[in-house]
Image 1 (cartoon, rainbow, N blue to C red):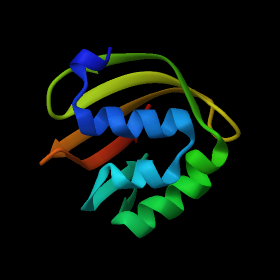
Image 2 (cartoon, one colour; image 1 turned 60 degrees about the horizontal axis):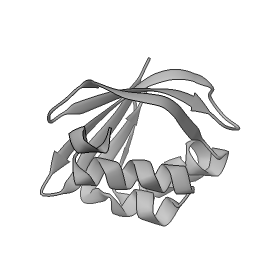
Image 3 (cartoon, rainbow, N blue to C red; image 1 turned 90 degrees about the vertical axis):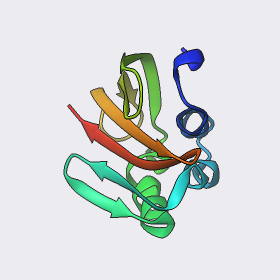
Image 4 (tube, rainbow, N blue to C red; image 1 turned 30 degrees about the vertical axis):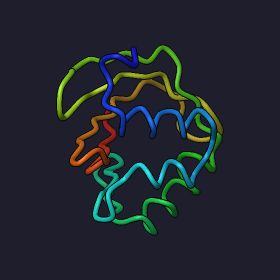
Length: 107
């Protein structure tokens, strides 16, 4: 799958797999954002806080991950597990200058 995924997106996915919040946040541009089902978290501090409470802090896992829309933006469909939300979700990543400009989570 990694041959279809831009480096910035792969860094974020690797950080999620490793439960490494520092690496996850570092994948984003300084003005990047996460949109979690309509709730927006912009900038490194807010992304870190969101991830502490909703992603890495919930020991999230991604399985059966597949690219559903290649390109930029790129969308993956994955089965989310862990101590928070469990179920299928789409994650759409937009990159700019080898950093994540955004990550949007939807059904």
